[in-house]
Every structure is written in structure tokens, then in C-alpha cells.
Amino acid sequence: MTVVEKKTTDRLQDNLVQVQRLIERQRLVEGLVHRQEMPKHDLVESIVHKQNLAELQHKLDAQHPADIAYILEALPPEDRLLVWELVKAERDGEILLEVSDAVRETLIESMDPHELVAAAEQLDADELADLAPDLPRQVVYEVMGALDAEERQQLQSALSYRDDQVGALMDFDIVKIRADVTCEVVLRYLRRFDELPEQTDKVFVIDDEGVLKGVLPIRKLLVSDPEALVEDVMATEVVAFHPDEDAEDAALAFERYDLVTAPVVDASGKLIGRLTVDEMVDVIREESESDMLNLAGLKEEEDLFAPVIDSVKNRWAWLAINLVTAFIASRVIGAFEGSIEKIVALAALMPIVAGIGGNSGNQSTTMIVRALAMGQVQASQALRLWRKELGVGIINGLVWGGVLGLLAWWLYGNFALGLVMTTAMTLNLILAATIGVFTPLTMTRLGRDPAVGSSVMITACTDSGGFFIFLGLATIFLL
Image 1 (spheres, helix red, strand yellow):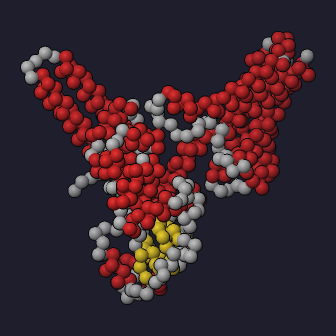
Image 2 (cartoon, helix red, strand yellow):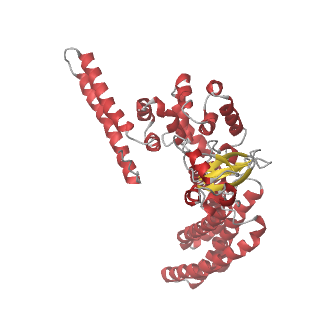
Image 3 (cartoon, one colour):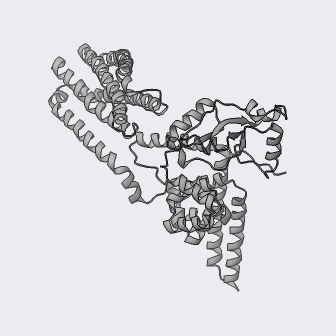
């Protein structure tokens, strides 16, 4: 019996380190052999090279495709291509599905068309639909030509939907039964399979027209009377999806109802596929990663070892916006140069007001973006949310602004400066709450991703606003 260990993060990291050491040792040993003067030098060098590659390949053969994908993503391009060449050809398709989009692009560019065709032919129709958008068009045509009529229709169906729709993610490998047969007949039918499709926790019950009538959980089937009819033991309240529904909404439903699989039906109720929990976990993970990137102002996922110019293109847009906002903040400070010259303490205290405001605004934005992603908030609730965040900002401003005001009074011996500090902190947190609530809600209303650049906008507004409020109050009440 072969035991497959679950790979914890530490275990994955250990595998990565071992692969990196094997690569380093290979290059070191081959470099030494190459510099040696010896008889039959080329033969010896070839034998050493093959021995080193064999050890590395043996290590890779023992890894799960997802673990190899993890290793590939963590290696620089030259090492990545070396490892990729050692992966067995029949595993190429599975690994291409697991790696990030950016890394997948580099791997596909390194492969010949016939290698891509061979990799794609190892995949099912639903898996091929995930990979097809990244493949050269000629490769896709060649692979489709090798499919039978049913698989070709399934692939075309999946490709007709956007990546963020249920139809692009549905699995066509489903087990269907009729409602007018007994449980014993169903059990005999299932035993005819060499193995059931992955994630099979239920069989789908349909009528003669293929319309979904209910589902029969496997655990229910096993304990039911063999002579009982399926229609008497099946569940008729079913969470089903349409192919044009949003994949993120489906993923949230899987989380809410603890689903393993769920049927996908067309407008007439006919069963056309199923969703599985592994696909939904990927959707949740990808959405989470996308939100993280968008909050930081990154346009898309980036290969860790991407060329400099590619990384620049991915990051320049929001950096340019940030440059403009930073320039505006500098002009705000410039407008109060006279005040700062007369009260030097203002220069030391104003970054605190701006920094705390940015932090508070990012907290508000993160809460709103998360609530929007989970469907817990609507744009119509904006005022109520704003009032709540306003209350949080006022309390935090008075408490922590009061603490900073006391410190300012103690440090500089100026009671009025402490009051200005407290007031400025409170007003800036009110501004942060306002921007933090309305920025993502406005993006949503405009049909944009609410996470895109929100943190950049928060920082820009609270910096400029914080400087203006603090220096303005100081000018009015201290000078």
C-alpha cells in the first residue's frame, strides 16, 4: 500500500529546498567535471549529467502535481524550465492547471505545439476548458479535432461562458438515475463503474427528458431499503445553479450550505453538469488573492521572477496615481510652511495624524470590501454603514487623539497644541471613515471591483486631508 502524506507548509517548503539543493549540486558538480582534464571527458560529463538529472527526476516523480506547481512558482526562470523538462509528459496537463496564470504562460511558451497537444489530450473536457484560453489557437483546434462529438460539445459549451461564470467551471462527469427505479437497481448500476467520478457524494435524479427531479445522497442510498423507489427516498429540495450565474456567488453558496457537489441546470431545468467543492475552493482562493492585489493597486497576478519590464507595467498605474496624490500632499504642507517654521513641533506631529487616519480608513475599507464580496451589504445601506463607521471614528479619535494630545502637551508644554492634536485626529478619522465606506461602494455602483486601488485612495485622502486639518487648525489657534 502506498501512503500519500498531506503536505503541510513546512513539508512543501522542505521539498522546495531539496529541489533547489539538487539543482545547485548538479551545476557545481558538472562545473567541476567540465574543468577537469581527463580521458573520455565528454563521456564522463554526459554520465554525471544524467546521474544528477535522474536523482532530481526521481524526487519530482514522488510529488503531487499541486506540489510540483508550488515548486515551479518558487523557482527562477532557468531553474523552473530545468525542472519542467524533467516532469513526465503525462503529468504536464495536470500541473499546468495547478500553477498560477503568470507561471503557466512562461511554461507554455517553452513548449512545442506537439507537447502542448499531448498535455491537453490527457485532460477531461472541463479541465481542458480551464486551460484552453492560455493555449495557442491551433493547439486548441487540433485537440478538439481529436475529441468525440460529446466531449467536443461539452468543451464548446464550457468555452462559451466567461471565466467568472458557473458554466466555465462545471464538470460533465456526472452520475444520473431515474426516479422510478429501486435503490437495489441503483446500487447494481454504480457497481458497473470502475470508479465513481471524484467528489461524488450524491447521484442526480432525472426524468426521461433529462430534467432534474432531485438528488440521492450516497449515504442515504446505502442505508435505504433496497426495494424502496428512488422517488421515495430522494431529496427534492436541491441547491442548483444556472451556467450563467456568478462563480463567486456559487462558491459562497457552497460555503453556506456545506456542499460537496451541486447540479447545474439550463433554463428548462435540464441537468447539464455539476459543480464540485474543489473548483469552488479555487474560486474563493483566487478571489481572495485578487482582492489582496487590488487593495495594493496591482493590476494582476505577477510572476515572482517576472522580467523587470513586466513588473513595471503591472505596477506603474497606481504608482503614478500615488505620485500625484503625494505631490498634492506636499503642496498642502507647502501652503503652511510659515506655520511650521514658527512651530517646529508641527513637523514632528503631523505624520502621526496622517498615519493613524490611513490605518483607520484601511480598516473600514477592508470590512466593506469583505462584506461586498460575501453579499452581506448593498449600496442602499451606505448611509447606515457610514453612520456606524463614523461613530467608531469619533470614539477612536477622541480616545487616541486625547492620548496623543496629552503627550504633545507633555513634550512641548503647550496645552493648545494638545487640543489641536486631539481635534485634528478626530476629524481625520471621520474623513477616513467617510472615504473608507464610500470608495468601495462607489466602485461597486460603477460596476468596478471594489478592492481596486482602495487602499491607495484611502492613503492619499487621509494624508492630504490629515495634513490640511492639522496644519490648518494649528495656524488658526496657535498663531
